[in-house]
Image: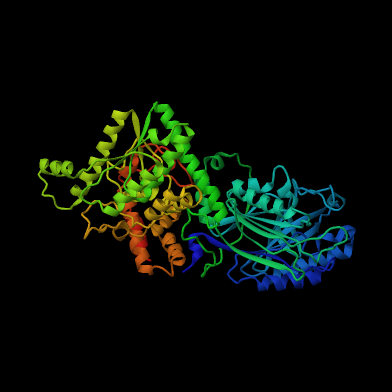
Length: 636
């Protein structure tokens, strides 16, 4: 498999030891670091002025240093192979100016050079003593190094992607050149830097790289000079950082005397998808750039990058605690505002004893608190046992109401469903009509009750069910306001568990624990020996797989083959490849076929980066076909 077909590109950043003012020695050190980089790297990035050392100071005026630098650059360019080498060196112009440049080499030659624009001259920096700005410089170099452009507006086309280069202070400036390089198509941005260390500066540097990768919707890779630079007044740490779309991918350990290295795989296809979706990026004014053909991107036979099996759930417990509070606040605030707009007196909710209705019920309690109304009189909770209801889930519904001091109305629907089925000449077999009749009867009761108590019906269906169409049209698919519409199934469980541990009184916590242990089921077919017989995940597949598919389909724009490849890696120890392909086929088939249910969704709050609201994030024709994607997947 070639992962470059899916838009992956491997980039290595290195901070090799430096021999100050000895370009030939540095050429050997850089060459060794370059050769040590992974053979499947597409780009190998070195720090600012790494050919001479950043801290040469007035030695930059020395003619011997100039001539040795040219020889060293020629050696490095000649030794470059299919991996792009980006290395820093000074360049002396005939008009007396010295430029701080990045030289881009591949397959034995220099293909372009980018000068630094911003020269800091404050605090410990004194660059304007030696270097001039590269702003406006646009020359064609033609000498022993070969013929190549030297200018700041270069974008290097590498296969189906492109990269741009800026140098150190350029990133710190008010208008970094990387902004226009990104708008011109550079999906990867490289920064050669010599940033000295100070207390808390690493945090600032890291945040700056992350923020610029987010602002430019790019992969941003940063390589700073290491501790072998002069320590006369400052110390350099060799900080190597990589971020993608505002998220830190990796960073190196600092202060390694023998040099440091970092290797990351960036997802250019995901970056492209983000840019296509972001109209602010698409509509931003562009300036002209010069494109350099850097050749084909190397193949990437293996992928080291890992993907979370639960992309909607933060792996860090502290991060999840903050996320959980935000989600519940968004849900409760949206519902409370809706109550005020409707001038409603009650919140009408159906309690099944399952996860989704439990989370919605907890949100109703929080919304009541925001409205400064007692939950006991604001909530109108109904449980409506029917032909498929078990004693276990009924007891959970009763326990929830009891633990929160809310009256629970029990309205059995057996006779109503039986009469309805008889009216339409149904034989009572447990088919789709039998199941949907129960769901629609419950919905009718909820809405009619809401009319009687001047309330609104709170929906409980989650994002994963909406994606799969695992809901009955004109039944649990509808509500006055659905608080769970933006919450995927895997996240629902974590939210309920977090609530049980951190906010619930012991009695409520015990009931929530009971709900969490209950198999996911719609309970629309008769139980077997009093036990749940209809298990959702046995019918439509594991929700952990479907949420993984949903995230990468909607959030990253991945196609069927890429989703399959990533899922096989993420779930290798849990599911066979054939099983993953089967459930991905189910997901795609259902997602396309069930769009008509999402087209008429009631309002509900968006809580994360993925939403299926037809008025917001996802608009799709009801008649769209999954055939092409399924055919592509079948070929895997």
